[in-house]
Length: 142
Ligand code: HEC
Image (cartoon, rainbow, N blue to C red; front, top):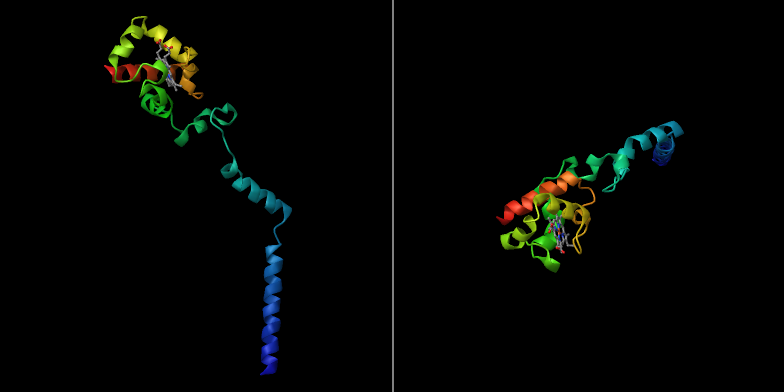
């Protein structure tokens, strides 16, 4: 009985040694290959960083619609009319501004106007994106 026990113990320790050896058996080459494979997952692309592809900067990798941009940035001020911003849905607030011509309104939205920050703080927006958002805001106010 005793000998069976001790040979079982011997086998067990051999198995343990074998497991320990396999665990350490990853070569440097394999290690590099593993790191290469997991690398894209760990890479971060911050919004506005064009070095890693502009599409990645937008959540979901898709271009944002004017409505998405409005809801993401502009609504913070323009849904309530904070600091005298023309409120979306209030056409009376927009009429005097539109009287200057839509191009002047586009330019003010792109370049900023007093408290209105340039591009309404949408750093990833192109000028055309901002124009489309202005169109959307005016449409929603009529
Ligand atoms: C921090 C608050 C704030 C945010 C965010 C903001 N706006 Fe404004 N916006 C203002 C204020 C205040 C004015 C009024 C400026 C004035 O007439 O002095 C204004 C004015 C405007 C006007 C009228 C310009 C004109 O010619 O009279 C447009 C168009 C506009 N904003 C578009 C946008 C768009 C598009 C966004 C989002 C991409 C945005 N705003 C985000 C505060 C904001």
